[in-house]
Length: 370
Image 1 (cartoon, rainbow, N blue to C red):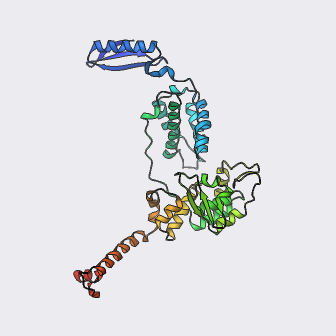
Image 2 (tube, helix red, strand yellow):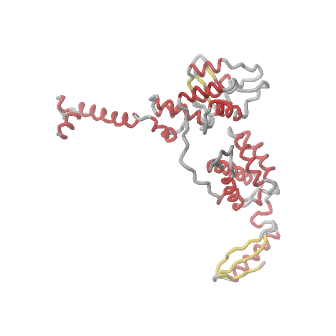
Image 3 (tube, one colour):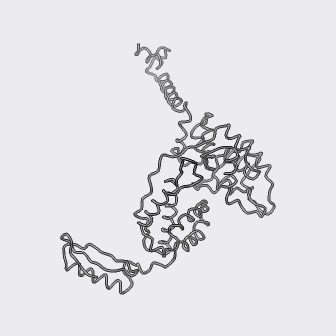
């Protein structure tokens, strides 16, 4: 420990309770630097310095289990996604104490993950972990560290100075009608009703798998979702395909869950079954969530109003729905046509204007252009 001068400024040099060395720039006064250093020594001796000694000695994987049990599973619909993320995160941070993980360690994780190949590598073609995947894992890591701070396990979140990676524009993949037929024909008995609900209601995977029989009103052809992503109740209309698919599901007498195993437990993971159906149908570059995009895209292409699509999708505002607007060539044309009709009506009702047909807006404009 000591003080030293560099480039006209005085610095102090000391070691933290965890053995790490720290240097601080104090200013141009040597006396002030010596005073601050003395205060640091006293704080370290009393076990108060920056509260670093209060960091609990808990490993990354031990706290990850605690986070999943106390926060993720009870409060998050996407808790199973957190489990998948932790499998990759533990490969990098497993065995380390939480307080020993630095921002630099996390930057190293980002760089290494982007170099990792995924899937089967074809000749001359390599596929790597995407930036969006890394960002989702960073978000899980950030939330976990926030809880560690909130629960008194850690004093500072090392993610506070870590930025997410820049992602390409949003991906929009949907099935054409021929692909829909192929996919449904390739689904197993277990998967078919799940895929039908996704295709014809736009419900999210968690909403479908969490469905219970009391949520379904076969008389009114309505599915009521109380626990949605945005926290608002949503009523989803059923068409004939959805109703038929649900009616043919054999009910388990021991549970109200619609999609469950023989023991009544809700299906937790349908990735393998869905991947098998995709492979059999010859459909590539497609995720389960893209069935939701297919629902919205097909609606827009058949002329559905964008606000109606927004309500059916459960979007809080129209911004999310607008990503599908390019699929409706008539969307902008209809908007300007409506404006023209409104102005035409105003012109006809204006008292100061002659009621003669020749005073219609269209005729006036035509006359001015001649």
